Image 1 (tube, rainbow, N blue to C red):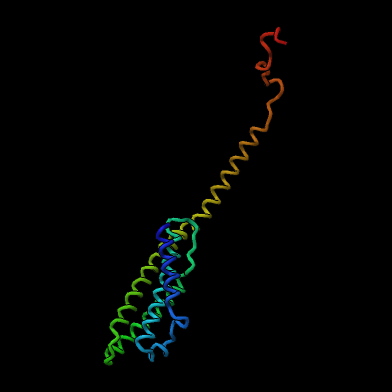
Image 2 (image 1 turned 60 degrees about the vertical axis):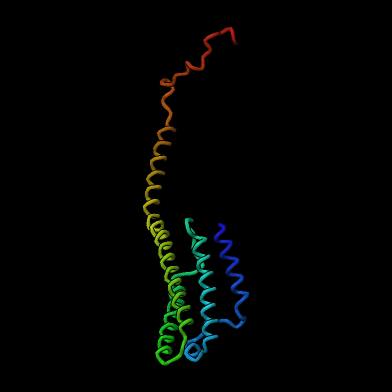
Length: 176
């Protein structure tokens, strides 16, 4: 629980530090962006990653928990990081020195890939439970049928001549 609180504080602090205009750049914008803009975008990816990490941490060890990020959204972020990395590698080959920015993007991609693995693990925990549900329903139906059969047998009263009421008779008649 303490880890979740720390992550929340870090996420809020990082969002306050980022400029208000921070956003994920389009491909064309990223190709023309200078090192400062790319560094700001890398920080944005880092902040988004902290939110994803927090969401996944809240679901660890809990049943029926759905993180606030899905696999498609996470894959889009990973694809955007891959595009930036490829673009920066090309720019590096062209003579620009963007090694620090490139390192930031590579580190974030590695983090996102770990988040994807955690999300996959959570999805696998949820999926078997959903697949097992039809079997549980069938077992429950059989159990209900057996209970009804037992209850039906208990409701059948034996003939009056077979009933033994001697246990209700007082042995000591003076007590009356």
